[in-house]
Length: 287
Ligand code: AMP
Image (cartoon, rainbow, N blue to C red; front, side, top):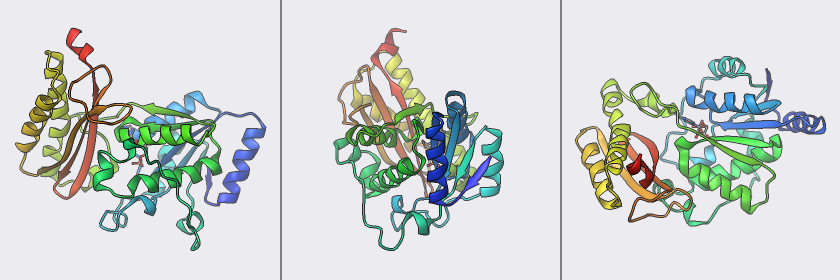
C-alpha cells in the first residue's frame, strides 16, 4: 500500500490509473478506522481495480466549539487496517496544502436536505463536508465513491452535489455497521465513559422499538417519535438533540410512515453527540 501526502503526487497517481483505464474506488474518511470504515474499503476493493482512502480531519466541517482538537487520530493503526482491507493508496494530505492561507472557495448544497436534521445544530458543517469532498474528488478522480448510511444526511447531500455539478462519480451508500449490542460504530464512541457506553445502546434500542411498532401497524410519525423519545428519556446520561421522521430522499418531515421513510436521531450521551438512523416502511407491517 502506498502512502501519499502530497496533492500533486496523488493527482498524478490517479491520472495514471485513469489512463490505464483502471476503475478507481474512493473512501473519504477522517481516520481512526473501525469496522464501519473497513466495510466501505472492502466493498470498494471488491468492485474496483484501485482503492484510494483519504484520511483528513477536515477543520472546515467542525464548529469552533466542537471536537476538532480531540478528534481521535491513529495513523499507524490506520495504515495497518487499510493495508489488510486491500487499500491501494492511503492519501493523507496536510491541512496547509488543502487549505492554503488564500483559500476562499466553498461548495454548498442549499437544498432543504442540507438545512434539516444535523444542519440545524451544526451550522456550516455540510458546507465544510461538500467543500472538502469537491477537492478530494478532483484530486483522486474516482469512478465510485463509498459512503456510510450511518451519516444518512451526508450521503443524501453528497448525491445532490454530484448530480448538481455533473460529477462523473457513482455514489455508493453502504449499510451501518454496529457493535454486537447494536450501537452504531463511530470514532466518537471512544469518548464515552463505561456508564455512557451502556446507556448509548438506547439509541438503537429506541429505533428498533420504533420498527417494531411500525411492524405492528403504527403509521403515525408523531406517535412513533413519541415512543422513541420516551425510551431515550429513561436514560439519565442522554439528552435528545432531535428525533425526526423524514422522507429518505428529501429529508423533509412526514406525518405518516410510508414506503421510503427514514427515522434519524441525534443524542448527546454526556458531552458526546451521537447519531443513528433506520429506514422503515409501511410494508414492514405486512411482512
Ligand atoms: P468518518 O471518518 O466518520 O468521516 O467516516 C467516513 C465514512 O465512513 C463515512 O462515509 C461514514 O458514513 C462511514 N461510516 C462511519 N461509521 C460507519 C458505520 N458504523 N457503518 C458504516 N459506515 C460508517
